[in-house]
Amino acid sequence: MAELKTRPTGASVADFIAGVADPRRREDCETMVRLMQEVTGRPPEMWGESIVGFGRYAYKYASGWTGEWMATGFSPRKDNLTLYIMSGFDELADLMARLGKYKTGKGCLYVKRLSDVDLGVLRELVARSVAKLA
Image (cartoon, rainbow, N blue to C red; front, side):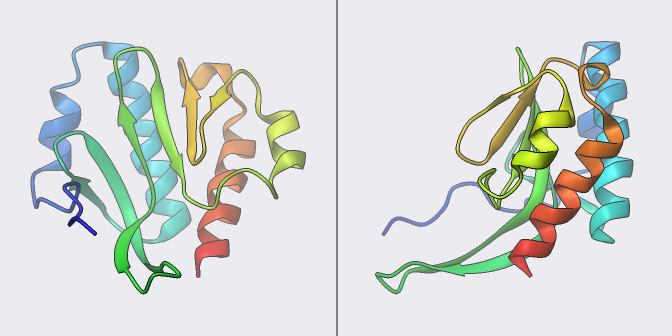
């Protein structure tokens, strides 16, 4: 299996967030740094050029391939703030029903802006996802 291209870079998270052009998106990023750092107890680190990750977990596929990935994170994309909920959403239906306005992918939660979601519910969502990985 090919080696992952997205990995911790050591780049400055503060500089990355300061470079987010849209002031509302930048403020949402600052909020997510505080929320995810509080939930995980881990400092933010850049993964690749555009993902801010928190914590790490090890995984192993049936093929024997192993790796390490962020426990949670986010990226300020053009259309959405992408939040990485690595546990997926299957066991989080109770929270998803109360979250607010969003879309999902397999392990991604897409929100236009944080004002569209309940931050308390989002905090619990991140906490439960991270706990499931431990």
